[in-house]
Length: 355
Ligand code: COI
Image: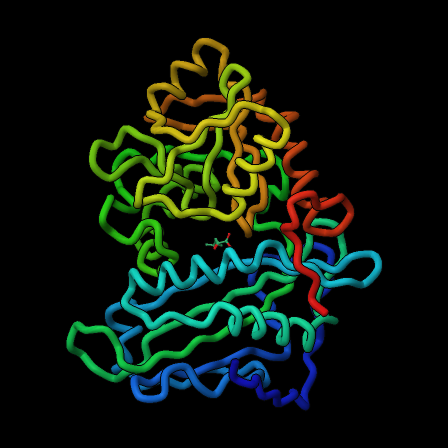
């Protein structure tokens, strides 16, 4: 494995207050960078002071969006240990996204070493107040100056760190979600299951319209029939119906969330029935009408577990669990954050300590 060089910053920034820490607005003192060229492969792995990236205006990323990203979090325990949650899963998913976007794969062990090195250098940026963490954003982008539509021959892999609070202004209180019946996020065969910028760019219009109506985000339906539930864009989605938990099955257009996977494993561990299947919005509407829709919640790295208090589907407002956090959502939130922050036992070996 190549050596990671380190150049420390001479100008340490002021850290933000931990009270009401926003999501993704503050960045630490250092960043990790590595370059790729066809003849050298990935080379020059380095931690450097946090700084702007200079690119040619013709760089492929600006024109054709050849880029992927990841998101994970580091937590600091009472004993000052730094914990990462299933980071190897992020490295694997980053390479799955890379393959879909024709970006050369990155050595997952090197990616993990880079994460650990950068975090240990900026470890005093990890906030410790409840509900806060250090959000880690690895990303890869095409740097070759070329206006033809073709995979780049040069790339950069960068990791930045951001001390964060809750993703939604509601914190861990229930959010209101609008079911999107017009726009679509992804279709089978497209890039919906890759973590790539275009999926998020195409979601902005619907998001903006939903926000104007007082909703936090939109719930996407399938791109073909506009019937089946997919995801919320920054979260996967779960419903508890009549004692059973259901979540849309992975179908090629849904993001394979690591929190989603962990929640399924947790529910199985608790012997709570959990099923991955195609779920139509009609089924959810009916279950609600029959009083069987007990809870709904989103799962994601940024959002962790976000209870859903209301769904608006074609002007039918479905209030879920009286607009309050359900018992199961709360139990999953407490267990997951407990494991992530080292307060709770980790029977699954999900947590990795940064030495
Ligand atoms: C994450 O949960 O880490 C994500 O990548 C969602 C992001 C769009 C905030």
